[in-house]
Length: 149
Image (cartoon, rainbow, N blue to C red; front, top):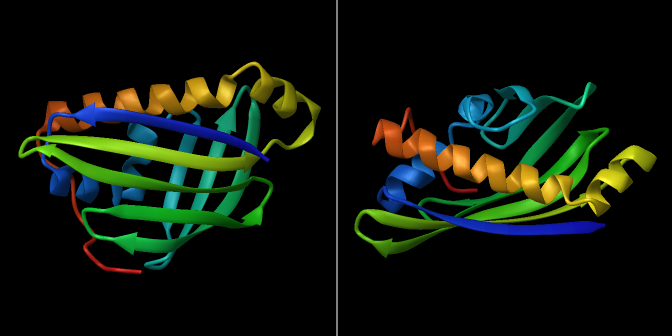
């Protein structure tokens, strides 16, 4: 199992950053390699990804969700094996630190080599930077789900 931990500060209030993060179907707008996410239930999402020509589909279950604090998940079906948590920390009224921690199991030799070369860490770093640009440019979330899991 491999691990990646990354964080970034965004210039929006905690509730804005958190609310946008709960809009899983918008992830393709800032996550590289994510083609589509379908929110099937309050706690189940279906992902379609394509990275370096390799297409994968998997389901992820939200295992914990606390408004303005955290969202945790684990894959439950499909080729990808991962679990993680993203947490939201108030720095100032208009600044939030987002921390993402993820454990994942590379599938096959090519993914294992990519992991050793730091591909996943660079992907996560890029995704967080694109999220920052996305939410700061908008200045407001596209929606929100304030339920608790």
